[in-house]
Image (cartoon, rainbow, N blue to C red):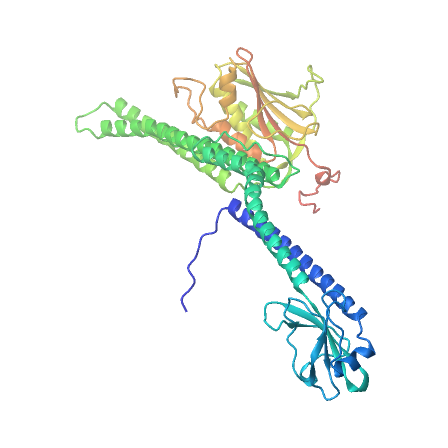
Length: 508
């Protein structure tokens, strides 16, 4: 069996007009049929009532046997009466006359097929019309058939039928014409939505649908589509920004790796030349090769660490004493003989700008190794980008205030643990401060590497802080130094214990 050919559906406007027209036509036609049937039944009931009210007198039966029936005009209206004798033969004489041909009646009473006093319809003798007839029993086994013509009933019903047909045709035409206007008006918001969608498809992504009334289905659809368009546009912007960051990151990584590789290649070629070189030059070339190799290895390690932190960061979860971490960082800086003086002190908050002389125990939950790495990166950044002899201050405490940072802000008013690394260097301008946490970003426009560093230290520190549900903030101004704030959630109550020797997992 061959499948039926698929026909594409018509437009929504056409289907709505067709559906409304069909339903309205069916309703009008049903009402007309009901009216026609009711009127026909009512007219037939009137005729039947007239037949029921008229009974031939007993004398009429006797006169019919003697062929002595009264003449025309004896019966009212258009009544006709036909008689059958006791043997069932129809008599030739009948009561009533007129221009109409009488009903078609059989010559024998057995062929009447009429029940006593039950009206029925029979065709006329010439077949052009119908008669309503009823049978009555008479004396001595005789019977009579009383008949009334249905010309008036059929004429009224015929006129009503033609009137209904004309009214139905006018109704269908009016429904099509009016339905097109009503449907076009009702679908006007969808039409505007369609035109707006076409303009958006053409490239104007800033357009939005104007019909957003929440009380209508089209308005709710418009609101949903506007929300979807906003999210799509935001996703496209984020994708473009991510792609731009990726291109910039790859370019910066290649730019950072090119310098040590070029240096290694140049000094290696210098060392491999056949002509004799002084021992001092060879040692210097070897030293520079090792220095650039170490620098490139550090850069590769930082890139691998960033990739790991971005993909699947894994952090230990245990109570961490931030004051101890800060003290270890100060001790490590002193042991390495740094040219910068590093000291440890209490945090100065906005509520207490002068601070106190007492250090408080500040704890949080996290990975102590990664948090120590943040402090090392911040201290390294301070030593790298400030002149020798610049003082660097590490402050530890709790606070409820916050500043601008690269990561989402913590809940407002929640207690936080804070470690500040503040220097008294030249500080940064607003533009540099807004980009300082970006990867490979340097405040020096010439991207000079005279001070060392890969440009990834602050990016790594910010990523680790965000992985601990915290953030890294910066408060700076030209000539007023930089204050980097590591803000972490304060140690929750369920992690606290006053019993010595209790481990992070709660076991003694």
